[in-house]
Length: 489
Ligand SMILES: Nc1ncnc2c1ncn2[C@@H]1O[C@H](COP(=O)(O)OP(=O)(O)OP(=O)(O)O)[C@@H](O)[C@H]1O
Image (cartoon, rainbow, N blue to C red; front, side):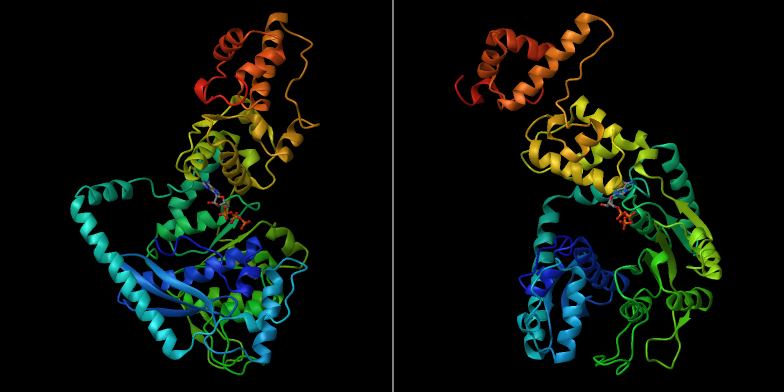
């Protein structure tokens, strides 16, 4: 609901930090923390304020419809008081991690909007009132449609891991293991290349276990330098370092009662590995600059694309920590080892990214063949991005043709980038001639933007003959109507 859509902030530091994928991820993650807080405490019906990874504030009001928490409305990207020199320096250092390499970071602090005490409480009231009005509106709407609760029940009855798509042998293994670990509290290590769904699996384990109503907190251990990561994970006390103007809770505290997903755990420094081991063994930690141990009850799910066993051998990862987090290991197979899942994944992403007015029902056989032969270094994330792109470019066609695939993918499968006409030196002559004819017509249709009269002229055949061939080769699926034909028909 309210927290689902995320739009670039007009605030300059946020905009720069949102320029990178990691920056966007961290921003979404900061907003999610507020969501988790609301979810964790259903008694909170007023606005809450939370600091994001850039130390800006986010104020959010929970949205309850028929007494069910549905999300929250929020405003983000402002400071509660003008930044002092040290805070400005910290801001620049943080933004630099995410901003494009040559971005101008001068005078960044001056561009931060400030919403102080009185205005902040007005803003909070406004958000609460807006949430109230949405709830009232929804209550009226749901009275008009008594079938809505039944539909919601039907949805809940579907598979526990329904967001994770896959039917291949390796994925069925993963689901079996997930079923086993979901109800336990044991630490889980998820191993897999980038984009194989590690975070998705961690979320699903959390949401199908007893901690589902508690926070799910994510931190990527390679996103920060050591000091910032330590402070993010364990918090700090006022005065712990220059610029630490107040006590700050760490994410382990935020995750208390819930699950902490530590991504890229293999990138943690030796010092932080010691602290993590202590939380795992004793449930306690010391905030930066603190003298009093804090106690938490957090389930840790760690992930890495690295071979931790190998890191242990090289002395880069503590052996005792390795054994502590490697209690249950979920190995996520790369896409190239589960090609049986490609059709269902493609179908899933076509539905997921379908926009109003698009007709695409699938990909043309050539496109599927090329996707099936590609090595997918970026795994499912890369496949999802490609399908989203194809829908933008060819969504108005019923079957998206291979010509619209990214040249990166086409070139990797067919060196030289096509065209897709490959001479056949064997087999029946009439079959080879037909294959060539089909390819020429298909590519011609794309080249002429489906102008059959022009293509018929180019091919030296009559328009009616071309139409017959188009239908014979099944190339009419997704073609615009004749009347809509553009150009000189
Ligand atoms: N089996 C799957 N079914 C549907 N979507 C998937 C599946 N696996 C991954 N995805 C989608 O692919 C994208 C990448 O997944 P995710 O972020 O979980 O991967 P990751 O392994 O954690 O990546 P990284 O290591 O780069 O952080 C997400 O949009 C996710 O929803």
